[in-house]
Length: 190
Image 1 (cartoon, rainbow, N blue to C red):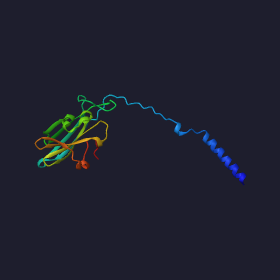
Image 2: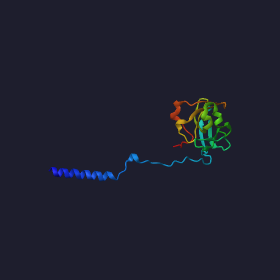
Image 3: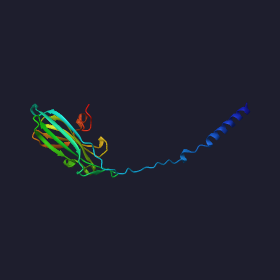
Image 4: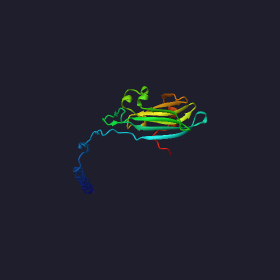
């Protein structure tokens, strides 16, 4: 019986030696991947978009709010860390009465919000859009958001834009309590 165990142990040891002989140690392997830094292409622009919303506002009258975003090549371009340029946007906001006469019309660029932007945002962010939110009392409320191109929503600077019944515009920090009701310009309506 001892002889059987000795032969079995010897056979098992031989198998282990043969099995391990051809394997290379994973710690000796060096895996390299060629990484190419993205090369800048032609300046990138966001798609033009127009939203129209009918709203009941002052004294129950009907108004139509039109917000149109367009990439404007003549605005200063911004660049990301790789040198890729992006075209900034102009947002045209119009409020028309039921008889189609214009109550309010103004074009906004990033410079309209410069007082609310810190260092790098002033230089490298773009005006991504303005969206009508709702009529509240004597004001039409909008949200404007500025962000670095191709970055997430978490990095955006959201500002509340109000248009009074007299046509005055005010800009303030966005109220975070309204975040659940926030409608962004690029979201599809369901």
